[in-house]
Length: 175
Image (cartoon, rainbow, N blue to C red; front, side, top):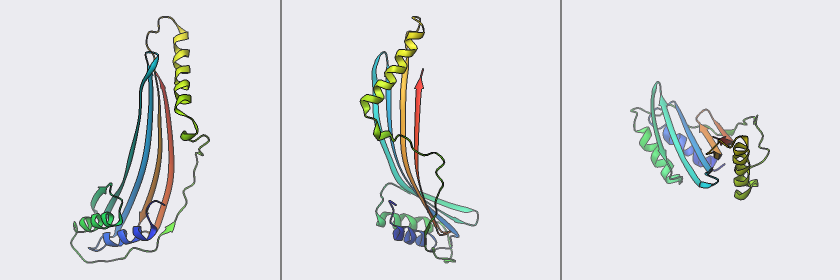
């Protein structure tokens, strides 16, 4: 877990201070890599990371939501307090103890993205490009691409559950 369990409970409890009846913390850390070949050469290689926490509080059918990329305890508590002030009222419940709830992984990772070096990925794209050009001498342009995403998600809620999931996505294109 990237967010401390006790911190998560304290943040959820702060969310409920003005009568909220449900609160949720959603943590996401996503890393992407993109590789593109065109005109028989590497056109682009890029990487990005998106990391942050979203907090939502419900009171009946009303909802407030906020997001921060500052993952410090103080920042999360400040956001929770600001969001809870979107409601008028008194506390009707407190955040319960959090229990880890398992999610069945139906798609096991066979080869992690990090297991292949960049050169091997580019060579793989080059093979696809070469195969296209071999189909016909009328083919003038081929674009190949590889997109990878590794995402870690944690969810904590006032039903007393905490979930953790690792998601891996790969997309290969040949145009």
